[in-house]
Length: 107
Image (cartoon, rainbow, N blue to C red; front, side):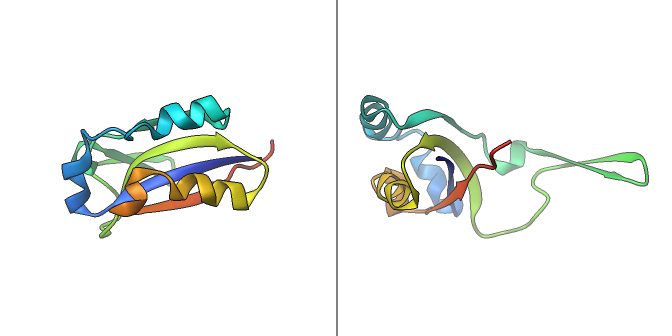
């Protein structure tokens, strides 16, 4: 089953932006579960798009004002949710932020 790990943190997580994953990516690639992923630039660099009544509306920055912001994602493939939880718990970002584990839809 495929899952996306959404790496989230508050503004203090920015100090970890250049830390890398401390070998987590390499370990998960060797294990055969990592399918991809990337870090994201800060929310201040975002452009939010909405279409309302046929009109494209753009705004700078994130759409929602929240304490936690999306900082990156990892795509994993594993047997079940239990394995996804074990993999996410080993990610260094779990120690200073939050990781949302979300299954992908089978299309």
